[in-house]
Length: 191
Image 1 (cartoon, rainbow, N blue to C red):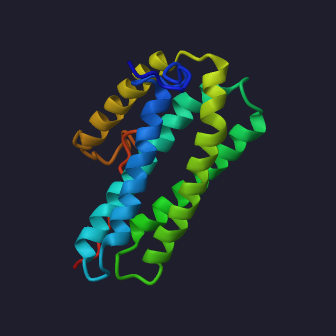
Image 2 (image 1 turned 60 degrees about the horizontal axis):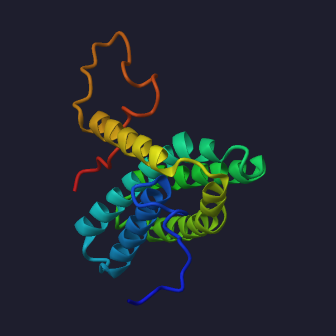
Image 3 (image 1 turned 45 degrees about the horizontal axis):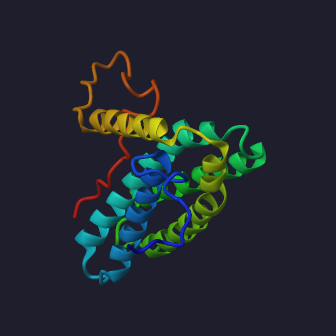
């Protein structure tokens, strides 16, 4: 029988726990950045599709972290670290909104994607090296948080997939209540 020299690291990050789910999101985003980098500039439709998918994944991930992961870290890390993480999310959201208005042939499209990639990579490293271990050390119930994360993601995805309410000219339903019913505005310039 072969014994591993590794200590029981499974307890630090159980499969299905919040850290494993967030790490999987990080890998998905890295994969999307890589897919974008592999596309030729002439493949505009594919580049636009990958960036839309990337921006949607980042927006969902940031919302889930803001609602579940960062609150679970309160008391386990300095508030300043969580404030910094929230500011990084805000910066990322601004770039995502900017990309939502740009087309692949626009001057700042590639630069905006590159800046977003740099910001996301720094933020992911910060989370994985500092915040993930802090949550594991704090003894948080990662499985329960993972269940809550999956349930919230399903709820948000259901909200986003639902048809928007009819506009009756009286009340902007759904626009003033939370951000879950607001899809990132898609590009609308004629092709």
